[in-house]
Image (tube, rainbow, N blue to C red; front, side, top):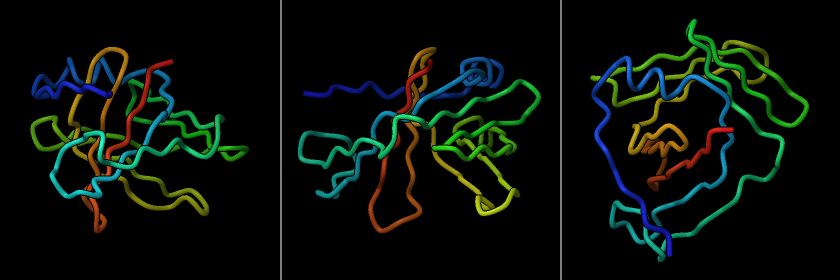
Amino acid sequence: MLVITFVSCRGGSDVRDKLIGKWRPIKSVEDFNGNGRIDPNDLYKDPPLDDFFVTFNANGTVIVIYMNDTSEQTWSLERNNTYLKMISTSGGNAGMIYEHIDSLTSTSIILKDTSGDLIRWNIWRKQ
C-alpha cells in the first residue's frame, strides 16, 4: 500500500531550494475513481523509459533529458509557491507544463495535473 503525506508549499526560497537538482519521474497515477486522492484503486503506471531526467538550475533554467532528446526550458514558482511552471520553446517540445505541487520534500515531489479529463499525479525522486 502506498501512503503519501501532502504538505503545503508556501516558503518561496525553501521550495526553490528543494527543487534545485536532478530529478527522475518514477510514477504516474491517474484518478480513475474520481475521489481526488491517490489510493490503491487508482492505476499506477511507470514512465515508459529509464532515461528520463529533469534538472532544475538556480538560474531558472531546467534541462529535460528524455531518451536521446535534450531540451532546455525555463521554470518558475507561481501562486504562492504552490504551482510549478515549466516553459519550453525548443523544437518539437514547445509547450508549457503547469502543475500543482501537492507534496515536496528534499527527496521527492508529487505534482498534480488537472489539465485533462482525469486528475494525474506525477511522482519524482531526487537523484
